[in-house]
Length: 198
Image (cartoon, rainbow, N blue to C red):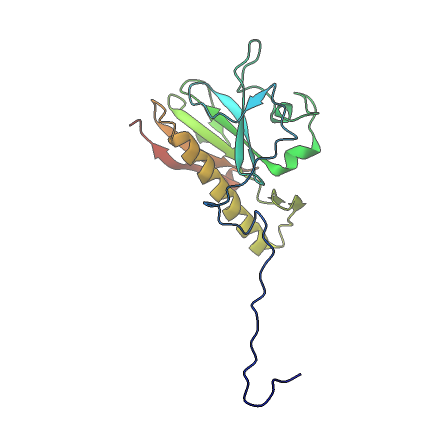
C-alpha cells in the first residue's frame, strides 16, 4: 500500500541474524568446539621447539598440534590420529574440515618436496593446499569452476598466513619459512615468507 499523501515511507533496515560468522571477530572471538579432537594426542598450545604435525580447524580458527609423548615422534603421527576415531592407518570424516600441516625444526626433514629443494637446516612450515576441496563447505570443487577454485586457493592461503603468523609470534631461534604444498608442484607455492630470529 502506498504511503498517505504528504508522508514519506519509512523502512526499517533488515538486520542479519547474529551469528559468530558475521560478528566482529575482535569483540566476539570464535569459540573453539573441540569435540572431534583427540586430546590425548594433541594440544592447542603451539610450540616451536620440536617438529610436529598439526591441524587447523577452519570453523573455529584453531590450530592443534601433536603432543610430544613418550614412544611417539610428533612429526610422524598421522593427522587422522589427532582426531577421535582416527588412527595412524585409518582416517575419519571429521578430517574434512581441518587443514593439515607439518612443522619442521632444523634438521628434521630431508629431500625434495615435489622436486623442489628445501633447506632443511632451517625451520619450515608446510601447509597442505587442496585447490578442489572447500574445507568451509566440505565440498568438492570441480576444475571447470575456475572462479570458485581460485577463491578457494585464496581462502586457504589466508588460513596458511594465519597459521604461519602464529608460529612466527613464538619467536623460534632459527629462520622459519612457510610453503603451501598442493597435489602437484604446479599447485604448490614455495618460500612464501621467511622470518629470521629476533
